[in-house]
Figure 1 (spheres, rainbow, N blue to C red):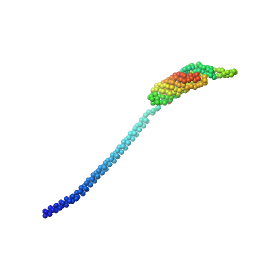
Figure 2 (cartoon, rainbow, N blue to C red):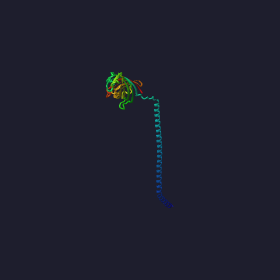
Figure 3 (cartoon, rainbow, N blue to C red):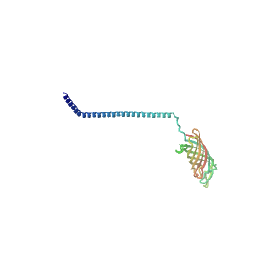
Figure 4 (cartoon, helix red, strand yellow):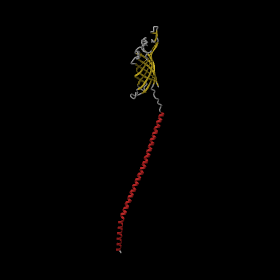
Length: 291
């Protein structure tokens, strides 16, 4: 009985061993596949988690950008409001008045005495006997162009002066202008006409002013244009010539937009008016009104 049992156990053991040998590879293969599946599932889960985190980070970044943009816009709006408030509260800035209308007058001294008017080329009265000294009066407009001399010098103003002035030399001087023809057909001077001796000058000149912003402002005219008109005319009946002027002076703003000043000028013409010399020196004062 024991022997039969041993034989049965031996057969059972062999059968189990053979069954295990047959089953083990399949079981091992199935275990490896499950392990790979689990790893794949774990990796996929991690990828999904990372994608979810990336989406969350992107959403947070967008939110931060939106907040930052909103804050920047708010800051700009605040700055604009502050600027508008400051402009409303700031005092009104009035542009300074730099142009000026000037009334002037003074003393004039000619280099030579005025010659008289000739008759048919003959000097009936070659000299009026007028004194070299005269008085003058007139006006001018100063147009201010800039206050930094075209960007080259701060505080130095450049402008253009347009002026006109009348000079009175003498009253009622003989001009020998009346002629008659006698019975013999000869032309003679029958009467002596009286004439006032005077001159009109029109000018245009650049004017350079210093110390911009100060009440006291010296200035100079480096060279300007003169057009001289004389009366009575020259012995050749010429009344007009051109010349130049050179000048210097000073302005003082007595009260707002009202200025007083002194100026001296020399007027020179390269040629006379058929014997009439218009070269002269002027010295005078003026009052001006800015506009």
